[in-house]
Every structure is written in C-alpha cells, then in structure tokens.
Length: 327
Ligand code: ADP
Image (cartoon, rainbow, N blue to C red):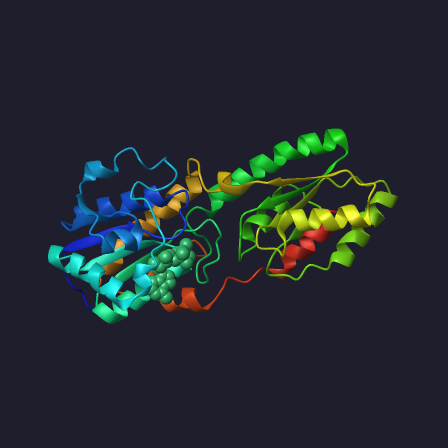
C-alpha cells in the first residue's frame, strides 16, 4: 500500500449515537497526535462540516472521556449533505483548513455519505462502525452494541422479577428498527420464551399455539422480546395475545432510549480504542474508503460499499437455540 502523507485529519460522529464513541474519538486523536498529525473535531457530523463547526483538538481535549457514553463531538443527521451543494460547502470548509483525511464514526448511512463524499472530492475517508444495532456487514462487532445489549439484559432481569411474582407475561420491546441483534442476544441471555425480530417473519398462529400449549402444561411464560422493527412492535403483539388468550395477564414494556446511553462496557471501550488506532494507521498507509472492523478478533479493513450493500445475517442456529432452551 502506497504511503501518503496525511498532515491534518478530521474526526466526527454521524447518525445514531452509541456508547463507546468517545473512546473511539480519544483513540483517533491521541494516535494522530503521536504521529505528528493535527486533528480537528467536527461537531454534529455532516451538519457541522457544512456549517463550519470545526475546532482543533489536543490531547487534553479527550481527557477523561473514555468512560462516558454519548459523544463529546455530538452527532446529527443532515438533510443538506444529501445534496451536491451541501457536500460542496462541506468540502470547502475542510479544504480551507487543509484537512486531508477523515475518520467517521457512524452506521451504514454515515458510511454511504462518506463514500459519496470521497468519490466526489477525493478525500480519503475511514469509517469506524458505531451503532448499537450491530447491523453492519463485514465486522463481528460494532462500537456500542455490547453496552446496549447489557443495558437491555439488566432491565429485562428486573422485569422478570416482577413478572415471576405476579405470574405475568411481559412483552418487552428493545431497540432495532431494521435489525434484531439486541433482541436476539438479550432474549437468549435472559431466557425469553420467544424473540421476534424483523429479519424473520413472525408466525402469529404458531406463537399463540406455543403459548397455549405451555399454559396447558402449567409452564410459566414470563418474557417475550420484540425488536422495535417487528411489525406493530410490542403493543401489536400484546393486542393479539389478549384477543386470542383472554385469560393471560400481560403487560408491555418498551425499553427505549435507555439502551443508547450509559458508560460503555470494557468490551466497547477496547474495540473502540483498537479501531480508532487502526483508523489513523489506515490514513497513514494511504488506504481510503474502508471501515475498520473486527473479524475473529483480528482487525480487518472492509470496503465501505460492502457495509452499505450487505446486511449482517442472523444465525439460524441461534433461533433454534431460543426454541429448545425455552421449552
Ligand atoms: P446511521 O449512520 O446511524 O445509519 P443515517 O442513516 O441517518 O445514520 O445517516 C447519517 C447521515 O449520513 C445522514 O443524515 C446524511 O447526512 C448522511 N448520508 C446518508 N446516506 C447518504 C447518501 N447516500 N449521500 C449523502 N449523505 C448520506
């Protein structure tokens, strides 16, 4: 790989926030400074790039943030960046500062934006997969997923206590508009009876039959986990269960944004630190339009367009495990 001298880089977060982004920013800033590269923080993602909300960062700018959720650079979704004029404005703001490389923490939407931008303006972009949804193909993990799923597990465990005491069935909705990973992982880890995810069409008749069968043999069913993206969400599933099995005492609980916040787990801090370090290495090696992923515990560089085109696939065996372990 041809070495290309980068002298000044920008770092930003875009799209949905995720715990561990701060650890990623810290790693990018400190690795760049170590190599004598100047670093600029771009506030609120592509919006800040367009509005010229950019400031120079020093080692101290990222002190005491590794353990903090959210992102000190803030994040946003920018409609203007979808337009050529918006991207031109963004580029001129980078150019006037001499910024010659970008590190973007975000999900597949942000990577799509990065790819369009670097194709038009010849500015190398490196992605860091930051999303609680874990729905980026080409990496085993994304920054924030582990924290989010552990937050969900802690909350579900607490709900189980009250569910058990009252012989109640809780239908719990977790985050994941297009992806069922939080539902699948937290559901297995809390011993849920059923896990409903957008990647798999829910057979409602089958779900009702299995609840009735368990009711008949007096097997208590406490938890059904529903991903947000499942048609109608938890409320819809609850309505159907109430209609079909009127005797069952059910409640709905929507976990919501609690899953996005909080101090990142050790795992998320670690992968964010490793990925951030490698993002700067990538720019120094003259790589571009890749994101830094982890596969089998090794760092991998994956073309941005692979994340954009493909989705991570749900492991069918995991669905089988759910069924067997809840029988
Ligand atoms: P995430 O990165 O969490 O998936 P979004 O899908 O909302 O979040 O994308 C974040 C931002 O990336 C968008 O608001 C937009 O500014 C930019 N973006 C996404 N897709 C494109 C695209 N095709 N062209 C230009 N910018 C894009």
